[in-house]
Length: 455
Ligand SMILES: *Cc1c(COP(=O)(O)O)cnc(C)c1O
Image (tube, rainbow, N blue to C red; front, side):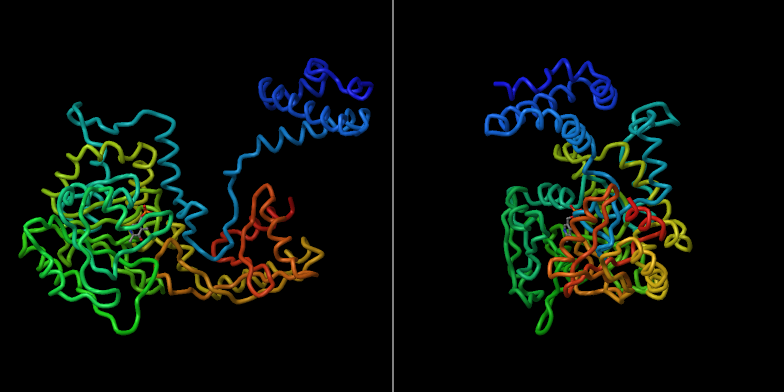
């Protein structure tokens, strides 16, 4: 028992100068709970034969470390040097300054979210975005929901519940995170009618499947894979004709859906939302935080009468957006009204459009300086390949540059990765051919990396 007596009481610790400082920093409840846990652990160790004095001496340090670890948010800002610009696991798009300012202002004060400042009556929260979306896409009307998955779900439910929804077998996709088209369809209450084959679907396949029970035809952009070789799909304009003739809704899920032609920024073309509207789909769904470069959101644009039906669906209330994101989206969409400055102002596009020569110069500049901060490793500039991410243009890579870091021993890249992830500002890259690669495409300032590594 002498061992236990070496340990202080809870009150002794809380009333000490050290204890008071911890309470100032973390609050009494948290410190007391952490202290109790540490004392329990120390008693268990002593019971197992550990020395009481030693356990008592270790206690203050261990307690402080527990509290510091508990206080550090895992959601702290980090550097995405993976080479994947829109990394779903890292939160996808980072927002433009304009969007960040609008979101902070919306957080700090009331705003006319559903209030008509002109007439003083009730307004609609979507009104702030509808005009902009129609202007930028050429659509008649628009509605906004939590994300594109919700956009697809509510559209399928509105027009397919208790009815049939026709989809090509080549487009029955899984997006990841368990978003599988057949499952979403079932949850929406629609009966899935598959047509065609994995590689080829023809107009007659759709025409032959239309019955009195058909609610809609769904076309899905195969965002995250590509079928190549002996293939055929029915283009949207032809599908629009088939749907119109049969009097059913054509829903085109674009997934990423860009508002600008990416070819202008040196990337491969992705169908724009305006093109999809012009092709004649009744409704088009796309994401807010993929190529568009805004916060998480889902958009449905298209025919006014159909959008009105979606807005009357009780699910709309369950998947609506909050004021913070509406404010950020409005600011993001406004940037698209000035395409000339878009690539400077919208981080997603700025990163995607960065020329390789620019990134390579940055890699040459940074290699010796990063090498000096990592004395046990060898750091050289290297060419590498970035990806857009989030299922956009999945088979395309963008020439990029970065740092190639190697060290002693086969596990050197893994060990270094773990160290960089544990930094106050975590740095993540990817491992390739026995080296850690830090793709610099998304590194706006050299200093951000140097400061993160110095910590
Ligand atoms: C990404 C994607 C979705 C889901 O969009 P979220 O905004 O992630 O909810 C749906 N359909 C397609 C084709 C996609 O690429």
